[in-house]
Length: 311
Image (cartoon, rainbow, N blue to C red; front, top):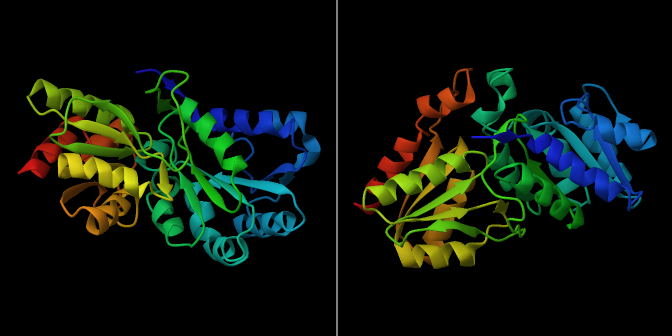
């Protein structure tokens, strides 16, 4: 399957918006190259603030600039933002509801095959879901990352865009609609089981849905590209039809998208929802595809779990 860079796509969107809005600035804790923001810096050299390896400073500076009406975007590795600068995001951005945008790189196992466990992150969504007012966008491929970045910049208040390593499977055709805050049915054979998928393992979820259909199980695949605020009405409507589901994500099963789906089910339509993700372990380093297989996120694992959800 062809791959494209979600990092390049998101930064291209922000650079296009910056041509029309001189309040957009990028704040980098030594992450301009990693975020593929070099072209932005070439075009707008006075609108990139490089603070060095100092994520806490980057977030604090962004908070200060947001109070003046600027639109700062902080770019760094997902964990360095959400862990190292966690208190700064919580106290100086989320609590006052400032218009700061955060872009986290190397989300999940898919994101860290070059640098290993210290640079691949599975806790970021769970951390930010617990902070009131922080919106979370989890696009599935590059073209969706482009649309998500544009949508994020139109939102008021803090928001987090989760990106990968820069080699994400291309799963959706150009022109695929994107709507912040809404789930979308990617493909449907029937209502035997729902598969909710989020982020850059969408290609595996699509393959699993097709394999299930070949084996006589006719399910529906739902893209959860906004984890917060979750489209609870949309999720509940799907669950009422299928009465069982699987939630698949490249994240720890605690606090991420799968937890959000379970919470929605608990409130609006109690039924069996099986979660698929990292099960309270730190994975080893390695090639992304091999890691996903090794830690229970293969296509066949999704198939087997979907069948188990129906039992």
